[in-house]
Structure formats: structure tokens, C-alpha cells
Image (cartoon, rainbow, N blue to C red; front, side, top):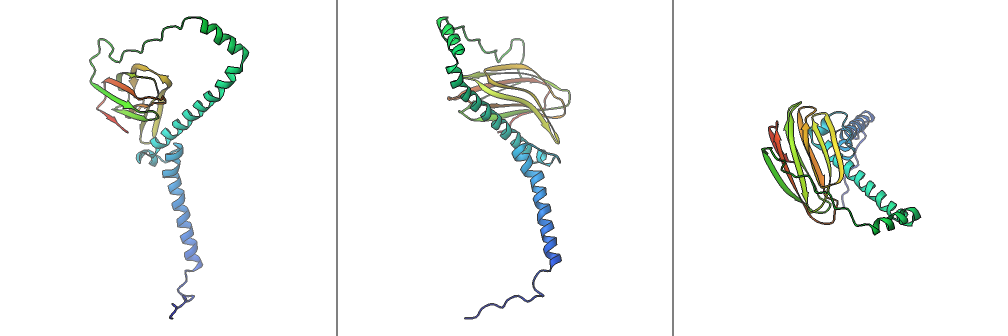
Length: 218
């Protein structure tokens, strides 16, 4: 049987070539780390490339989910401690003897006197999230109102552009919200909602004002 000849010394890569290949591999790894991994996993985007490639938004969502999971775990661990607290037990007994206060009605999604330009209803399954953005110029204002049918949601009102991002407001377990969104810079500004409940919910968003486009991102 014929075995292939071993390469000669002249055919083997030189030390200089190996060093150059190693340096190129290291540089490529650093570029991928800065441009893709950091924005996509940790929402850290020092170069702005992650924002252009929409990796930074993915990282922001992952960080929000991690924060929500940590908060839910902390609340779950605190519940047994409260149950064994004698003061909490007395308070709970006292409150149980009183008739429950009526639950506040959610704010109306269709505020009177406003002609809404767009209305977007959508349904979120348990654990599902979605994002809607308005394309706005710096200083532009948009009137909005949204209401949840069938439960509550966590939300994050924020904006982003190339190399820029801002969080205007966050909430947990909210059934409705309304107000005016003023763009801090030219770019996409809007909301991210997540259903942390055990049943489907329907969210209705109504908007009007100074924006050129409205889009559901995911």
C-alpha cells in the first residue's frame, strides 16, 4: 500500500506565517466579541456596530428578561418568609376580616377628545413579548394610550438609534398606561411588553402625533 509522502520542511508554514495567522485569528475573535457577542448578550455596544446590526436590541431584551426572572425569583422566595412572619399573619387576618376594596378600573385606551391615528391590537401568550416602535424626529411628540384585556403586562418604554438608546419608563404588572412620548433624539421610540401571567392577554395600543411610521418589530 502506498502512503503519501510527508511534507518537506520547505512545505511547512514558517514561524512568521504561524504568528501572522495567530494574530489574524485573535483580531477576528476580538472584532466578533465587540461587534456581536457583547451587544447581543449584554447590550454593551462601544462601537455602535451592534446597534446597526440590531444586535444591541437583542441584548437589551435579554437583560430585561434576566432582570424580570431575578425579580420574580426574589418575590417567590419572599412569599414563604412573609407567611411565617407573625406580624404579617396578624395583618393578613385583619385584612381578611374586611371586605376587599374594589379593583381600580384600567385607564381607557380611547381617551375622549383625541382622534387616534393608529390602533394596533395584539395578543400575548404567557411568557411572550412584543415591541412596537414609532419613527420620530428629535423633539417630536406622540400621544398614546394602551390597555390590557385579560390581565397585566410588564413594559419598557424606550428609544434607540445608531449609537444611542434611552429608557423612558418601565413597569411591572400594569393594566393600562397613557401619556405623551417625546423623542429624545431622531430614531425609533416605543414600547416593549411581556406577558408574565398564566393566560393570554390582548393589548390595544392607540397612537397619534408626530411620527412618520409605526411598526411591530417582533
